[in-house]
Length: 170
Image (cartoon, rainbow, N blue to C red; front, side):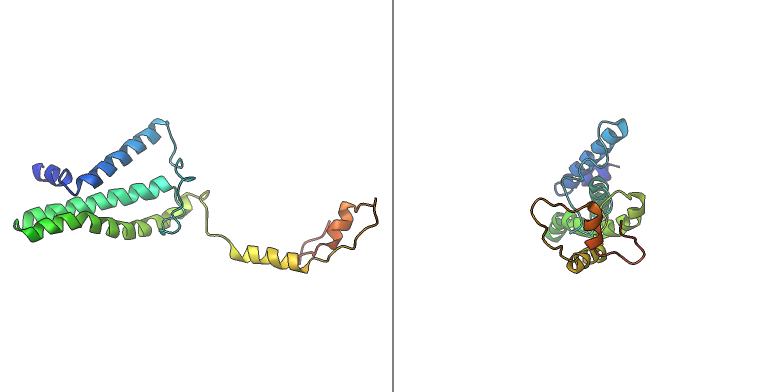
């Protein structure tokens, strides 16, 4: 147990331990009802990182927890199996960075199945729908100018719009 505490609070891993404590405090606040899991969604977009479709707090919490476990596990392995040397010290400094990179890849895999649990999260845009709207606008028949003082009825304006197959223009 002493070795675990030593590795978790050691120089490079203390950063991830601090981040994990912050994550745990956040989830305690969520459990107590002081905030919600989606409170950071307006602040960050994780689509570029490949972790979209779930709340930001879920993705970042998963990333932090996985990185911490990898870093502490690797530190324990180094403590037990590697003799103290300058190379081991360098590995201890590089280990948290490598743990974050591996955790990012693992988090991307872990959050993919969670998309179905969060249906209100933004999904990738439907490019087909946008293309159909542009095509419909291009096929729209321009209306003739009216004499001054005359206005079109809504039925006349709707009649000029292209109707989709299976839809009735009103």
